[in-house]
Image (cartoon, rainbow, N blue to C red):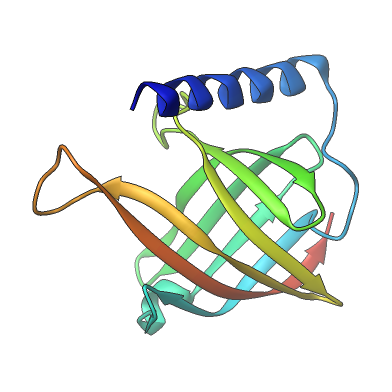
Length: 149
């Protein structure tokens, strides 16, 4: 657990340094707005209401996800991202209300083919059965670019 905290602190420090230095993320096909086409969580298809969303990746290393609900558009996640290589994304999410970065990060895989993004990997969250434990959740999502940066 102590190693995870140290690793998370290092990643957060790296993101703060990148943002404060004004170093933009590597310019590539990821930047822009993407609309979800399909998604699975732990191998189960997401319900249609949770698929109606977009994700914007900006050159300043920030991202914002929006979901389109019957009563309006809402931000469902935001934060900073890093691209250590052409197939790996590390994200540090921030609290929607306060904007403060969470003290941990997520590592995902992604592949872009033309205007299609395949995004997949695990994230950890509190177990419903025991809040002191972290449970892995596997995402496998397909997105299509709707607006370039």
